[in-house]
Image (tube, rainbow, N blue to C red; front, side):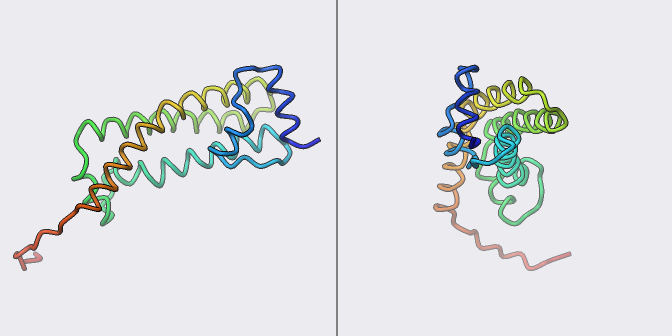
Length: 151
């Protein structure tokens, strides 16, 4: 039996689970076994990618060239929003790590349901922040610096 079919059976037992199509569109879930582990891995990979690729470079103060400009495009409130999303996603990742050590179906189910709620709450905010940065870059005008001294 395919992972998708097994998931559909679980969905009948646990009505709060997201639909397979939602998982596939948001997390590229594959129709492979072991099904719950595959779903958890797909979700965790995407969340980790968002944390490491989008949030961390800006909120950590890393001095990547792009982040130096991007932090100036955001205000303090934007930074706070990014950190709140980061906290929520990091919490989910650590819970995922714990679940990976378990074989309890109920732990996977609970985590998938809470992840869906968190994802749907935070992604619209993150999308707006991405829009703000995209517009910031599209409208950015580099200032000519007349200082030649480099210390």
